[in-house]
Length: 509
Image 1 (cartoon, rainbow, N blue to C red):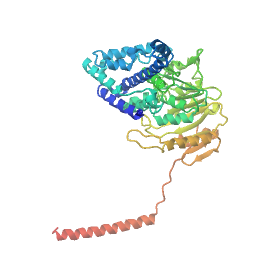
Image 2: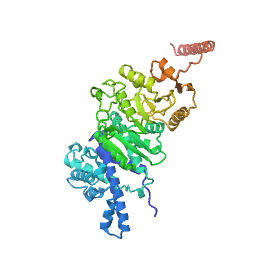
Image 3: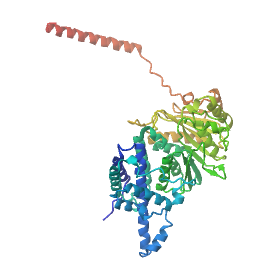
Image 4: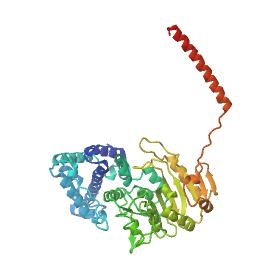
């Protein structure tokens, strides 16, 4: 009998069912941590159990040899950390405590993988024994239901429809939780279509080191890696929120990127991706930083150890250019590429931001493209954003402007980039990079190639409407035809009024 393979929809249904366990008890932005952690435990447990059975068969049931071989597998799963053990004890009065102990033992057994260099561990901010989950009796019932929900899934690769299902399901579920979390979601998730677009725009070559300086749950970083033509690349990231950093770590494991280096900390105040006390350099740097971050650390920037803000110090209430300056500093000096999502204010605000922008445009010529996106694409804000692409070592000084703000699928809560919208942007950008566009209008009401002289004439203001003219002329009004229509309507109205008078007269009015 052929075994039915588990699909992503199967996993999604299980997790959505598990969501009901926590709805109304804790905020959606929090219960994602519990559910995705349980998905991770189930995954590593099933893979470990399957590998152990393979080794037992290979060594004719010799348990000692099989367990010795298991030490070289991706994860070591102590018996008390396995999902099966937790499921067997699902009715225990201390099940929350048992799950917390299971997580601690799993971390200890995989210390190098599951702990950051500075000692932070991926489960340190989550407790299944927390009072936030209700009174002991209610909490135990919820955790029992959670274990029962996941019990029916077998997440070993041999039972899955394809190898990417776990990782894809994880990212899909993070996006679903983002939808439920509302405004808070912007802190940990970039919509999949936007991640895909930015990954394609910054497409890395084999052998590349790729970094996301504000990596959230890791979806953008993974998309950037998946755009490489082979598996020869390395991923690096840093995330300020401890819970979100843990999601990113699990996301890397579930996608098979066990060697990804994801650090926990504030990128601007305390950058941790370093080599010999110097900032590590990357071939590709991508990010969706928090828009116009207040209190980002401007008071410390003048004495920055790494001299990242030599172009100028951004205002303390808007950290957009601080993130961009950091990205430019860690991009490879020869041909590093930077792709960053920014609010439109970055393109035209004055003051210290204007001075930084002017210096880059006037002296460095590393800005390659500005792409305006539709409004309401991002969680937590309806404002439109833009993508800025910087490329070091480029020969051209021209800049491509794309206004893609009108091409999208209208959604109930969130607008969405369609495949054709992404392809239109990518095709236009590639043509520009390949030198197929002359200065001026590249595509009517969509794309414009600006020269340094154009930029200077606009006082180094990069506001897209200054370059891409999307004005639609109104159709000429035929006054004679309109007057004829008015005369005709007035005649009809008079006839109707006359009829009404006749009817009212018949009725005695």
